[in-house]
Length: 308
Ligand SMILES: Nc1ncnc2c1ncn2[C@@H]1O[C@H](COP(=O)(O)OP(=O)(O)OP(=O)(O)O)[C@@H](O)[C@H]1O
Ligand SMILES: [Mg+2]
Image (cartoon, rainbow, N blue to C red):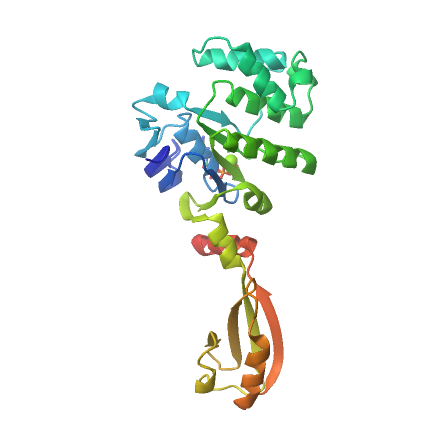
C-alpha cells in the first residue's frame, strides 16, 4: 500500500478559482518525489491540502491509510511540513522552537531526539540563539528541524532551496539523502530542474492544477538521452528510400528534412553508416545538425502544451 494515496483531489478557492483539477497520485514509502511546475501551478495548494492546512473541495487523500479530512489527527501525526514561507517565532530560541512543535503533537519531551535533529541539521551550536539572529539559510534549517520534531514518516518540503546559496543547497540535498536512509518518504517542490535530477527517485510535473506526468527519474533521463540528427536535403524527396528502412528515420512534410533518432548513451550512433547509405541512395545533403532533448525541454514542452 502506498503511504500517500491521493484520488481525484480538487481545490476551488473561495473566490471561485480552481487550483487543483482532480489530482491522482500514489507515493510509495521511502521514495523521494520531486514536484516540478511553474509559479501558480498548484504545488503549494496540493501539499497544503494533503497536510490538512487547506480543505479540499473534492476527492480524497490518505496518509498511512488515514483520511486527511475525516481522520485528520492520525494523518497529521505522520507528516512533517516545511512550508514555502518562513514563519517562525523570531524571539524563541532554536531548541525551544523545536521542542515546542513536538509538544504540539502531544508527544512527551525527548531531549536525545532534539539533540539528534539539531546535530543532523548543524544547528547544535546555535541551539540557544534567538531565531531572529540567524541567517535565512539557518532559519530554513530550523523549519526542517521543527518539521522533524515528531519523527514523521512523510516529510513535505515546499521549495526547500528557494533563494539559498549553492553550498546550502548541497547541504540540503545531503540532509534529504540522510532522511531517506532513515526510511522517511519525501515530497519536495522545486523550480530547479537540476535539483530534481540530483535527488529525486520520481518526478511529477504539475501545471494549471493538473498532474501532467509522474515518471521514474531514470526513465526520464533515458528519454533525455535520445538525440536527433537533422539532415537537410538539397532536393526534397517524396519518401524515404527502401534501402534506408533499417534506420529510425522520419521525413518532414515538405520532404526536405530527414530526422534520425539515436541513443546518445549507446556505443555506436550509426551516423557514419547512415551518411554513407544516404549517399548510396543518391541523396545529397545540404546541412546536418544534432539536437538533444533535455529534461528542461521536456518540462517546458509539457507545460507549454498544457497551457495551450
Ligand atoms: N488562498 C487563496 N485564495 C485564492 N487563490 C489562491 C489561494 N492560494 C493560492 N491561490 C491560487 O491558486 C493557484 C495555485 O497557487 P499555489 O500557491 O498552489 O501555486 P504554486 O505551484 O505553489 O506556485 P509557486 O511556485 O509560485 O509557489 C494560484 O493561481 C494562486 O493564485
Ligand atoms: Mg508554492
